[in-house]
Length: 161
Image (cartoon, rainbow, N blue to C red; front, side, top):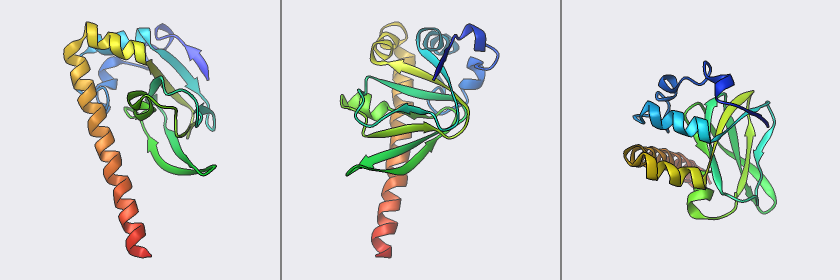
């Protein structure tokens, strides 16, 4: 992963455009710029691993451009579960649950991601409480959608067997 500054990517990471994504939806431009300026932005190449199973879940990643695939690890093997596209996230469950990552995230294509560590997420709460609340709702909504999709897959699999 290649760290890059928000200043160098300002045109590529327009806060107004980012607001159209799921996680940043309805978040103020100021709060988005705060996260971009204080978070860690990375360019990742197709096939590059963002995090691995067993690594600390002390941050999460928002896809700003590109796409990331998530593979759940179970009994030593990895299985694809979902793709996070622009405006989506990976790693939030581990961070909020205070546990290690239970899978790996891999760049599906060349991408730009924003890493938000726990401390920055807490600072967002202090400096932009309304935006923090909206972002938390957006994250919860995304998780609910993922749970629904995965439960549909489980039911379809159970019915098929």
